[in-house]
Image 1 (cartoon, rainbow, N blue to C red):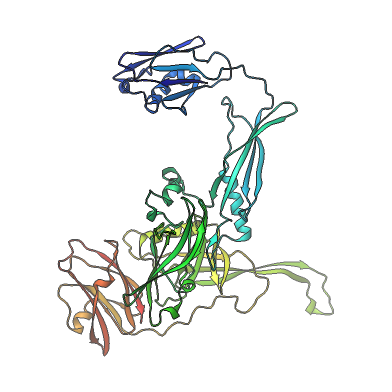
Image 2: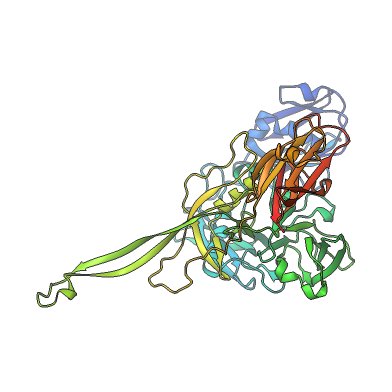
Length: 594
């Protein structure tokens, strides 16, 4: 091993001579080194090895004979011979501006038959306690490289995947959960191994590292790292939960919701905070839980509304949305905020689906709409001797009878494209469940093709088939999902659209676009208008109005008045702008019963 330590900057046309064995390499300082293509120059005016190293790597002879890296000392460049033999030791240089010397003399390669590298991989067990050996093998040397390589990511990922399949993933229940199943430490050992018979020599141990279950897409791996995603900068308030998708999502009062946080920074005491936003405009802030969180530790939090909200604490209040974030023991914010908007609308045939996400977390989705249930009957049959005296015995018997339930469902309308694309994470997940009577039932999606985006359509929805990952060999009442009771239909129509002048008569309202009162989600194209109207019959209210063009919630812009139409009192919801739109906007309007 050789080194060059630059003591001072070289002037134009000064030379640095490097001699080893029968080889002499002359590198010349040049004011125009950046434009030179000979590979024999380096820039003047600097002794910074981080700048100079690329020019020495660019020399054909040096790069052919040596691996060239930065040294530990300031302005050091290290030249390590690629061959284990004589003739590659630098001759001591005489230039006062650079120390050229040999640090470790080359030696002839020893005969080492059956040479390999013993490699052992250890990972914490499922409790996060002791380490267990998960891999032990001798690695061959890659031809003409003096190196052995092994990819350990798959071995660690397969171990964690196997154990969460057998023991269920990390799912928090009452208090925070330290996620030892899906976040563990590991290390490895290695040693030279050769001879006949083979002997193993000194064993070296690596540092301890941390693995998170999950991964990035092919494109994601090529453009970013999980560390960059979770902690994008020094500002701790931007540290992300292990969750993809928009920071504000709809949820139901009884819908499971979980958040997971991986601490990329120093150990700290953490408080989980919640802020309730009530329908009457008031706000309440509470601390849900406080606990210690170690560095490089993953914790899971149950943030479902029914789990954290105590109605008796807020009598006669109704929550519109709630916010979750983390603070440290000094009340500094150490995470992003996540918002959950309560969806109180009546939904027909709704179901909760859960999946283990690409980022190693349990995500939930509420899908609604009409579906279907059918089943395959699987059975075996064996012949037997027929009893001519009693036909009831038959001539064969049936055994191993089971039912494989097969189902279809729809997602219901999805209000924006981001949430639609996020469904890909659900379909990709190898661990999917449907929540039925408080029990997670494992399923698989059996549809091979699922529609996603059709140009020109603003109402997004998907339909897919799935089946349980178990067979039934007996029946118990209550096994089959029973849809909720359908509420009586609301009579009347929904009228909507842009207008030039605010309507003042029933005839003007009824001249607008219309839908049956059973509708819950629909788009409105504003055109180049200033006034938008949505007229609703009794029993219908506006839930949200989402301007898809500007990507914003504009529900509060609509003001309601009453008008009698067909002997019913309608709510005439009007948005009136100061100036007309210069381009047409698309509103996605959701309705609720109330």
